[in-house]
Figure 1 (spheres, one colour):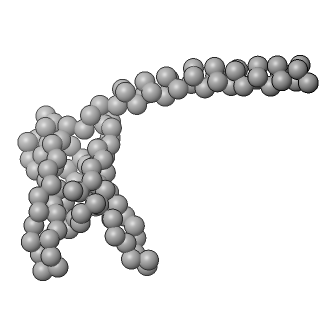
Figure 2: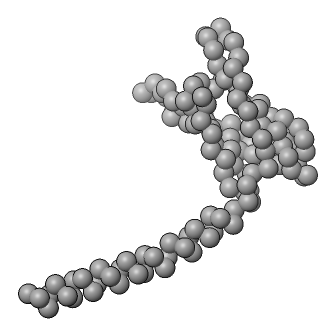
Figure 3: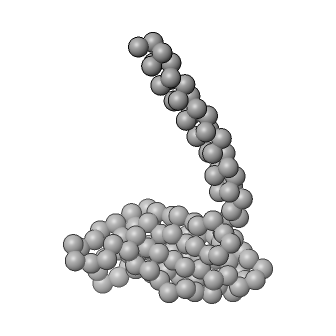
Length: 123
């Protein structure tokens, strides 16, 4: 029984060592992702339905930047999509792109090739 316990504990130690060696490699690839060169601000707006929000994305890039915006809705009807995908948009350097029709607690993900995605929550 003691021998069986030693074999099991040795196997668990080997699994932990393999997991510890695999984790830093994954972390370094995430660390290498460049931050998306945009500044983001939410603004309240008035609409017929009540208060909504807009997201203003201002490009800090020196070249045009193509972004893909996905809005994960905080309130969803059972027969509707849980996400709203905006068509890709090119933001010229120092220009601003506005995403309208947002609600409190919506999650917005801004992605562009070669950059880490920017995740924001409307508050």
